[in-house]
Length: 423
Image (cartoon, rainbow, N blue to C red; front, side):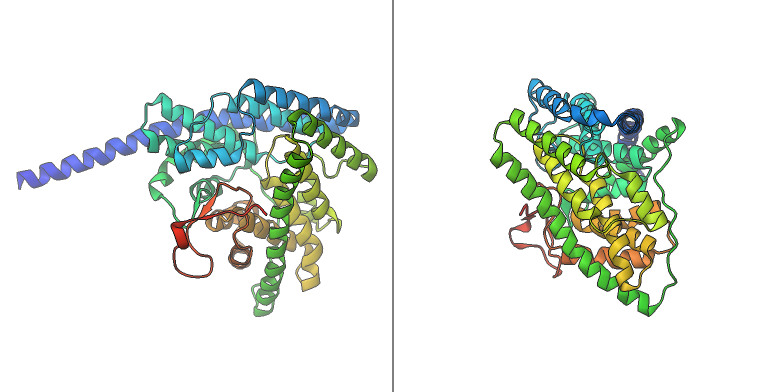
């Protein structure tokens, strides 16, 4: 009997020690990501306001691009992006210490000068770098450093958007679609909560939209389902535009200096031809107008996709998720009323559908819909998530992401893995 209780006590001690280790790391990572995320959020917002107050700053985009290329070359991290964070978790590929400061400065410069990009790609990279470096500092073994990388990505994402649950499940599911290591849930969620708390204390409000969902009826369920089918086609088109844009820019301009100048010039010419900066920067104001006011232009979604492809393909820094929000919200605002769905709610459905299909992260998208819009329309959001996840096939934003289970059958894919297609 004594040996029995001794063994049980030993096991409990092992679990407590392991949990304590992860809680300490998660709190440290959460605090650092909360501070860095808040500073990043403030600087991106101030940079955007500065550009809007002084439109001539758009002409600085090529110069900003040259600085970005120089920074990446000097830090010996040229070409490093979100896919490298995914590779770090999948294969243990190390992340450079310089990724955090270089990505921070480069994304701020991109937004200040009017590049069309988001913020979360930077969040995943900078947060992942913080997590990886903390894991190394704590002398964690290889696989624990990979989990620490996920903690950082979740924390930084949470600090920027104020969505700790979505950030946690996004980090857990974006690497290997179909398999989740739940052992990483507590450290990722604690890090996300701590970072969210730090950002709130420092004055960063969570992202939230006022949306009214229609009553749950059989007719509306069918209409939302049909709309989701169309959204799936837009997911495939959006991902292809981004990937083909990157391929085309690289093929036309193999030299990174020339490529960033050409891309900057193209963004400037497009903006001058259009007559306003509607598609420059992240475009959160357009997203808000589509969801809360039901206002969007029919061509918003395609123009944003094209300009983002040029910006990121040229070598400017930012992310793809906020542009994905933009494309989904504006497309839904314009097209959903054709199915008898209110424009504002259609914009919310479009945002959810595009994010789910493009990221292949269905649980994360469901939590995101609740944290952004509330739970009132959850059944409709779930319908859109399910349909766009399946019908978008194996397309996706991140080429290093792997899909381990079939989207149509209850089985593993041949070879245990399907690489996300890049077009």
